[in-house]
Length: 333
Image (cartoon, rainbow, N blue to C red; front, side):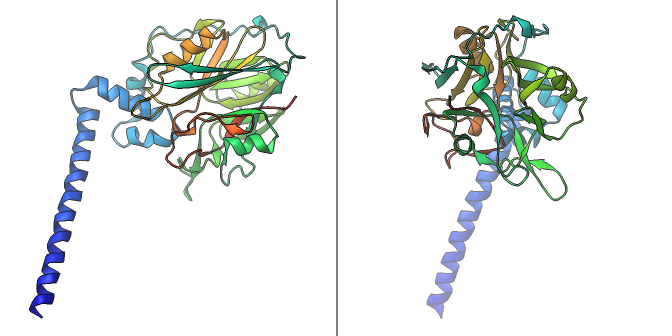
């Protein structure tokens, strides 16, 4: 009996020690978060908030500690001299409709590794979406395979809805904003007059960026569209100066040259030796490769590029390629 009693006391003592350690770790983590979000460390706060807000999956980290107005102020602190120039869509002169070429470029930066595809014929570029939309998402590569696509990147933001209707990041069942595909409005969670930052393609394959409502896009004869941003390049010029205000992470973007060629870009990140890119980094790559208009897409764990039958980048989600609501894919010729 005494031996059993001693063993029980020993086990209880070990459990208490472990519990104490766990509580200390939790307390230390909480204090660290308070220091980052409320302490005298503006650079660290800007980095953490910006990185969290760059992907729908991790926005809760910032929202646990800060209000939407505080987050907006921090994120926008990295954006200076924002350009409000109206896009000149007529400047795009598509002359590649008969060109089936796709070019691939590997991009090596000091903090990231990227991949860029140049799609000569813009009419091959389409918006795809999960075949179980409003139920669950689908991997970018699977959306590509559904359409026998030769290439694809992940698209816009997404979430799931609880029983109360609250949107939260999960499997990618619900896109945010709206989705146009092959000339049809597939999904919306906003009114037809609400302007959102968009990436769209009209019936001629010309890319539209900036803030537009569903009604405006219909008037522009849009065939493909998703809601996301921010805009990186407008009329061949940087849409903002500064780092972009959204930290460093894995990223996805799309652009178009004046000749109509579409640029699909992903940048890997969220690793110790490869943290990723800022919005300014994306902007610079797009300008370097001739983008006349360009915009940011959902990044972080969602960042994926599929090409010639396989995923060619390294998605940073611990479980590998994650499920999403939408993707931008390239039809077979």
